[in-house]
Length: 185
Image 1 (spheres, rainbow, N blue to C red):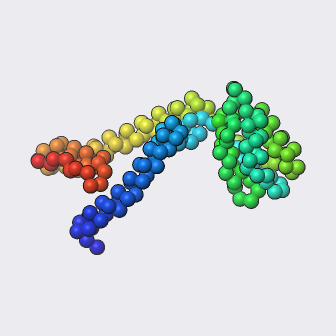
Image 2: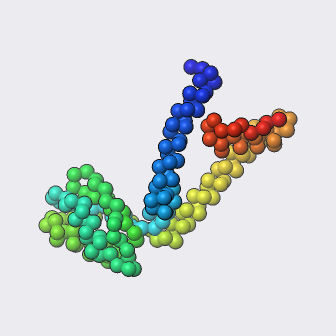
Image 3: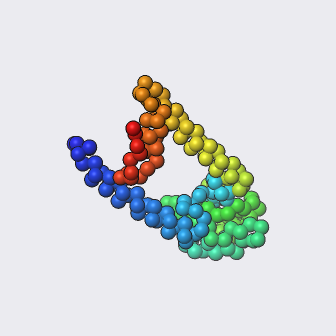
């Protein structure tokens, strides 16, 4: 296959993938106001509760109603993200809650379902830990970008005007496919 000969086809395929992604990111940002990508509880803080029912699990709306019932000003856990796990379990992500609230919710789940509810996993991340993880991720991305630039500089060390050439090539990596090429002379 001659990639260079068909480069405009590959540019088109790339654009057909990238542009809808950017559009949907912008739409999500406009709807939620939380940014283009929804960050998980690792970055924002929150709680993950995974429960398994001994019998048939209730509908997700019933679990959502329990979270709304136990939501307070101090722990606004209403509107959790509820995902089914297999046939009789749920993974429930919500804002941060303490162990006492978790115990009350699990007890209420057992009472409403009439079966035993087993907690498979419970983890809670505070917002301060989430901000530390976000900061560490940003630093890791910055360090990776610097490492790439250093490698490009090292790879072109024997080329005349290597700094200018390396900067031009690294600049090209941050431009969308089909975008204007930077000057290399």
